[in-house]
Length: 222
Picture 1: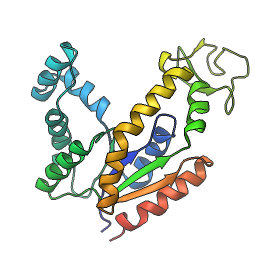
Picture 2 (picture 1 turned 90 degrees about the horizontal axis):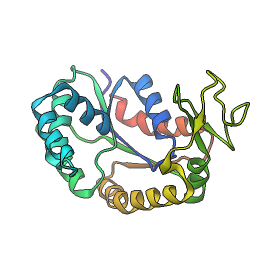
Picture 3 (picture 1 turned 30 degrees about the horizontal axis):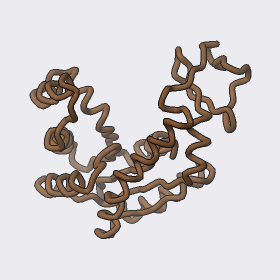
Picture 4 (picture 1 turned 60 degrees about the horizontal axis):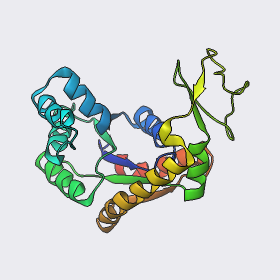
């Protein structure tokens, strides 16, 4: 029987991580756990961990790492036998990576592979600062790579296109700097453990997919 891996996907804003995560889920039967969504769902459901997290959110402070780890543990512990896990958005620091490893060890799991999608800084700036989104259906467009047929108007429903405040060139630069500062130690941690695979995200989507599939092959065989 094929191994059910625990996979981490990393990548800066604009790297196409969301699209590729969808491919990994569909192809390898992984449960996609985006920690931002997980946190919102726990709060909305009023779980014990969700209520505890809400107390920090209401105060405008960061939710502690141990709460996030606890939520991931609940999901991982309830996975059916043979089901894999795709973690997205966590860990963001070396300390979180160490804590995640300890938690997974208790569940007799390991991080099998870390897929680190890399794209040159200037390409990310161009991708993100050119991104516009339909206010109605949330369909994304890009003035360079996927422009709408009519400027400012969604092709699908005629909705108004808008640019997120954090997609301006200045804001994008700040977001990327923060990502690189926080994430470099995480990449180094997994590189030292031999589980990091760097994926060139500055190529057509199907070629990125092929590189991801090549990285997944060793950890799904067995």
